[in-house]
Length: 400
Figure 1 (tube, rainbow, N blue to C red):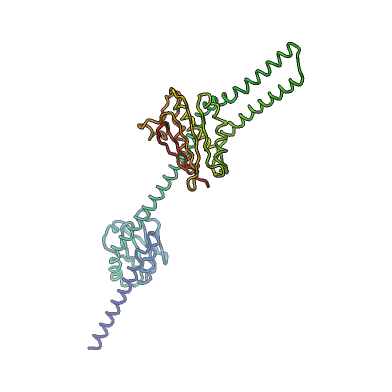
Figure 2: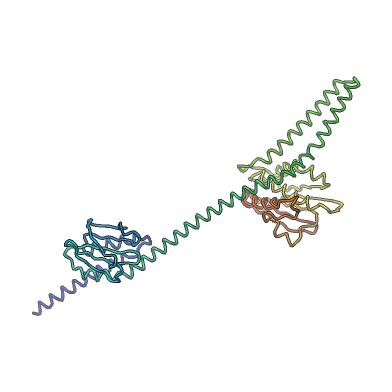
């Protein structure tokens, strides 16, 4: 009798150890992934293997026509939908098959057996429900977070795209706005050559009229006309090149940039009695940048300084352009003596459509686009402050 009791106790202990082993492995298989299908697959495979299930499935409530996961044999069965509201696992017998169902947070598990201790297996399965639901919630949370991140990335990309398109549109508007001033600049560039050509032609007509044509003098006059025509043609090329978009960065010096800028604006500044002084401390330093865009920035600032002199009676109107190397950058200072920018607006002059001019004469895009070009295209920065005599713009340009 004693031996029989020991045998029964040993058998009971063995069963308990087996149940503990199943519980340990199944618990260890839950929550190892934040991807729902992967996490549930690991648990279903482990539980089915340890309990000898011949078929195991996981359905989601929002798509219970087709299982999300299915391992083992394909076996037909029916489940009453109302039973899925039960907190505990439930079983049924269909065509000599034992059907075990456990409803979870977002779906339900189905395990199918043949001649197995279904009540004991059902009890074990219920023990995993809390951890399974917590892991499902974690998977859903991660999925929702990833989805939100993707949506945010899409929104950011769309916002960046719209900003880029808007910047291109504003850049085009800025160039169109400066074209009016360009016409004035061209007029100043062309006035002297056209006057010179007109005088030479009139003198030739006079010589023909009085029949005093000197062929040598005529050749010299025609050469002068040819020179002036070439000058006019060169001016057209200079302005046309300015309006071309710089698609690639090129190596150049500040001296070259200022020379190209002066060709465009120097005559106009002179006509307003404005003297421009260039102090170049970077002769031997080449910068790698977009030439026409940098010229546009300098032109915008010079035009701003020119306008600042309007209605001001000064003995001298001077704009000073100075370049220096500071570390790995070239810094361009543009200073005027026009009295400075009012303190109540100096913090807003780089805003789009903000203008100190009246509606007729200004669009408010010049300095804003200068900031965009320097910051986004050139990779530098632009600042402004008042000095004792006027305003000082500081443009920082990376050398490389």
